[in-house]
Image (cartoon, rainbow, N blue to C red; front, side, top):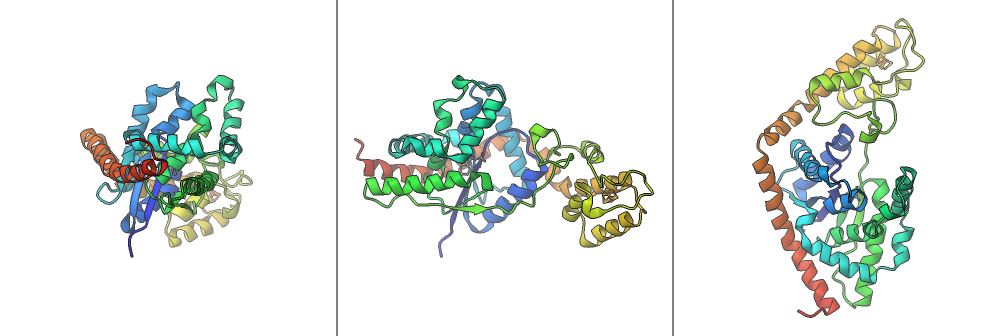
Length: 335
Ligand code: TRP
Ligand code: SF4
């Protein structure tokens, strides 16, 4: 059986947090073992909303790359690439944009949400660009350019994959061909990692722990985590199941035995929350130590990081070229 091809991209938003690590990257690392994987950094997609904030674009791209490599994405197994190094994707985007009805993009619920958020943040009409409307079509180009069978994404991205399937089908119908492959979303069951305040972990909420944070910072962050809100005095008996952040973290980072031990001690009022958090911080730091060490290595070898992304992009480009050639033949552009 031939390998399945798997593709996913991430926008370069800067340093990634533990939610990205556990929810996305560990899954990507597993997938690269047995599949033909393409993992890309979507710097063009970053421009759809941040065309006027490009000072940080380069650095953010590097930070994401460093986090990927630290997490174990392996350039010898997966093709790690930069979207803007694949001009074929921009060209495919042009052809797809011609066959895509305008209202398909306008109806895309994820895009609607993005627009809503931007407006809530005070964006005016001029900051909602033509490129932003094209967001789902550009994403379709990413996916269809590499013949992806599966696209591992979070639930919020599934609407985009639906549009991708619709566009592929419509293109194939119009040009009486079957060259564009309809991809399937592959939902990542993210063990939703909460931020220190109990909300979803996210950089904009300032409640996150970065992959790249040092041990001291990690401990400081964990010490701010909310616990069982009904536990006011240290002699109060605790309720692990109502402990909003710390106990769920124990379940992820501790062994079964350790987690049971914490549960007992908490319920009997034998451990105070501060001590519990201190121990948790130690656990988290232990688990992240090899990842952080690897990140340090790459931080000190940026030349190698640069080579990885340029080489990976060259490899990815071969596939993108193949698909684009077929598309241009089907559309009958002059060559
Ligand atoms: N829109 C995706 C996100 O914000 C990133 C992305 C761009 C992507 N192109 C893609 C994801 C292609 C999967 C496939 O997370
Ligand atoms: Fe949560 Fe630990 Fe406090 Fe119990 S002791 S409420 S598990 S932080």
